[in-house]
Amino acid sequence: MDWNHLHAFLETAQRGSLSGAARTLGLTQPTLSRQIAALEQQLGVTLFERVGRTLRPTDAGLSLLDHARTMGAAADDLALAATGQSQAVEGLVSVSASDAVATWVLPPLIARIGAVAPGIVVEVVASNRLSDLRRREADIAIRHVRPEQPDLIGRLVRHATAGFYAAHRWVAEHGHPHSAQQALSHRFVGADRSGQFLAYLHSHGLPLSPRHCTVLTDNSVVAWQMVRQGLGIGVMMDDIAGAFPEVVRVLDDLPVVRFPIWLVTHRELHTARRFRVVFDLLGQALAEQPLACAAAA
Image: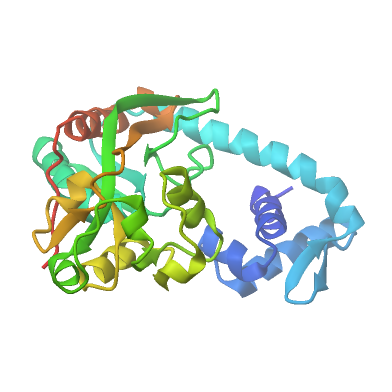
């Protein structure tokens, strides 16, 4: 049985579409479709049925899915173990971080890695969700939460702080709010419509409602640009905000927001020199206070 065909079946079942699975596997949709058709012909069953715009496994497909997942996990473990044996300080290392950290914190850190280990190519995965390190969505992740999976190792680099900021031009027009009560008279740049951002603000003593958000975006880089342009108050990591002279801290009567910075990788990868070198260099740089950040014009 061809593992590529099983892999195509597994990814399509997990993504719910040929297009999503094709992007993950780096294949064209026709190639992926042919692989699934070949597997169906070999097994003598129909694996998927179309429901609206998604593909859903048939009963026969569901009965095979757990077996395919087990084989996929074994293949991932094999790849991790093999990669961990490499002792060359060269090659590709992918680093996952939030979009804000990837934009303003990582550039000077990558420059430092390049000076120490010029043979290493760093791929930046900018995402606000947690990358699946076991499935190699990234080799190393910068996170604000402690890893819970037993096959991941994490290093608590330090605790950082964040605050509320607004542009000087905004303060000149609306005044400088200091307290939670004063915040109720102003507008904020919100994260999204899920309500998580408002819940976050509530947990820090700001009883705001949806009407207080002038603009919504789930991209923190875009949100920060909105703050810089004077559209409202926003939240940003203090190390990053310090690189932008056009903003000022507001709501300074509120307690400082503190959060951890974790550096995480897979246990198998940490045994390979190129991953260990990048992991250690990132750990050293992220431990510095304040961080050296790249400010955009």
